[in-house]
Length: 304
Image (cartoon, rainbow, N blue to C red):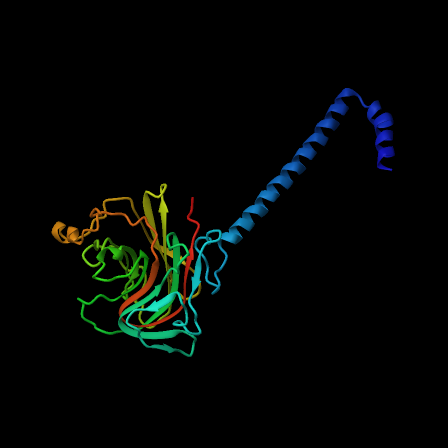
C-alpha cells in the first residue's frame, strides 16, 4: 500500500507542482530529516554520558561512594566487619584487643594502631589507590602536645622496621582531632620524613563523632609525578568533599640533615618521589581510642 501511495503522489501531485513549490517541498523534507537525525544522535550521546557517569559514581561494596572507578580487573579489599582479624591479608601491629560495639563498629585502644593490608604472593602490589574508612575518636590517650595524635592512611609502603629502614618508603594522608589535614612523605624509616604539607581547620573537632576519611594516590605525567588527594565525609552521610590535594613532582625534601638522611644508604635523593607500588597499605592512628568501620582499598583508574 505505501508503494501505491508514493506512485500516485509522484505522478499526479508532485509532477504538477511548479519548480518553486517543488524546491520548497524538497528543502522542508530534507531539513526535517536532518533535524530528526541530529535529535536521535545527540539523544544517544546524552544517554551514553549518563551511563558513564553512573559507572564512575557507583558505590563500593559497603555502599560508600567511589571518587574514582575501580581499575578493570583491579584489586579490591574490604575489611571483614564480622571479625577484622579473620583475614589472611590483614595484620594488626602489636596485636591490640578489639571490642565490637552495638552499632557493628569495632573499638581499639592503643598508642600506635596499625591495621596493615598486605599483598599475597602472586598478586599485584598496591599503587594507584583509593583508601576509605569511617572513624570516631572516643578520647585521646596522652594529651601532651609533643605526642603525635592523628588518623593516617599510609600507602606505597612495606614493613616499618629499624633493621630495614629503606622499606619504610611511604605516603601519609592524615587528619588530626582538631580538624586540620596534612600529607607527609617518608623516604626511609625513621630519618627520612619530610615536613608536612597541611591545611588548617577543614572541619570542627573530630571528637566523639563519626566522619569518613578518604585518601587517593595516583601517578601523573607518564609516571613522573604523584598526585595525593584527601576527601572528608563530615556528616557521616556518604557526602564526600575534596578538602586537600598536592602533587609531588620534585622539590619536597626530607627535613633531616644530610648526615642523618644519607646514613641509611637507601640510594635515594632527599626529594625522592614515591612513584612505586608497595605491598602494604596501613590504616594508622596514634594516641587515640578509636572506633572504626567499613575500611576499604581499591585499585583505581586514574583520571586522564
